[in-house]
Length: 488
Image 1 (tube, one colour):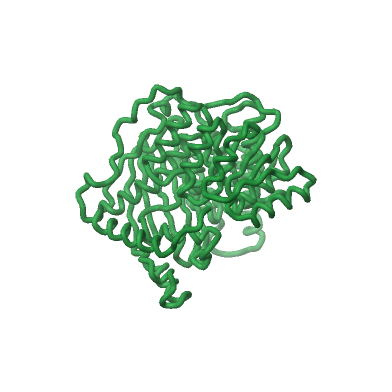
Image 2 (cartoon, rainbow, N blue to C red; image 1 turned 120 degrees about the vertical axis):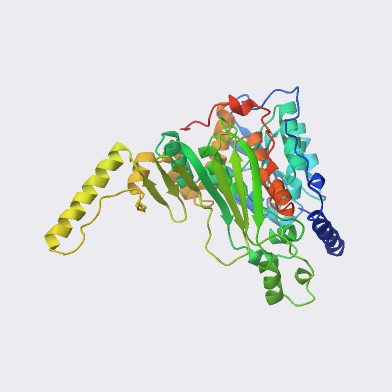
């Protein structure tokens, strides 16, 4: 949201870098202290929180430059939603959002700008029910807290927090105010992820054992965004911390498959990073020697691998790499006692397939066998389908297990777009829950648990990959909370 004095920022980065080097040689006592027992709170849990039905959801936006503009567009096409106000430091992006609304025949929202804290003027309004926050990471927690304190529900982009303390601040504020704080993890609403959630709930994979998640996305080009856009602030995170900077896209869906915070929870993690070579090399290649990008010391390892152990004994591997030249992947892998699903590319292998799938496998095998016999070919005959080979043909699986939410809204999601429709579907589902007085699919405990992996992974990396306890943000409620249902 804000411009800053870059000379002073470089000095602060140098100071943080020096502190990081010192920390890596310090005793474990100097690292983030995570309470082994959750802090006691007298406030009521917000697990399964519902609010009175809203016939119309009145929305305010903080940040409409990139993600926020997309959310504005989607909200214009969701029935029962009114955009009352938008806030940003830059007039041109607010005008862009307003112009889109004019083109849709909608009333132009009020605009708030002028300073970093102009959003507080917007929060003082009484005609806004929810606020959607799409700003640089450092603003996510303070803006979410201020939103809840103003009596409004907070919906914030990922990650919701950048420190353990901020995670607790979100949880404490949500419980005290009894307001929703949902981190908008859009990947949970992808067609593939919804299908796998449905399959996991129906026991296709057996008892779940292991998951893999990732954000592998080459983003060096963002370093060329100097004054505005994501790279203008995100680049500096690679120069001031280590670990998994961005864990939630892959981790969110896997957490839902495993009922994290609703029957199981994260227990502890260990994290290891590779060398940090790619961004320095890219800066030397793409920028003049005296350019600011070449003055930074990039310390975040090009590839980070973090492993989580859950209370029920499951394991989750998460990887982060936005630097090396390789294809995009979120892994999206889930393994159970009866088989597995793996993404990028999508493929399935199960030992005992569901009845309808087994019949199709048998029919396909008999046809293949007959064709082989009729051809008169010599040598080894085709083998029957088994879990030793991946099935890359997902049509039959989609016909059997496509999620009811996708069956209901998939066409509209695809039409309106946003990462293949997941953005639109997420916003539609948010508004549906608010309009019908239903609990949201993600809550503040998910926001905290998924976001806290970043700072704890940094602690582990700088502590020779020693394990770090993960707080129980639910304060024990995970043991009795109901799993996320197969919503329709």
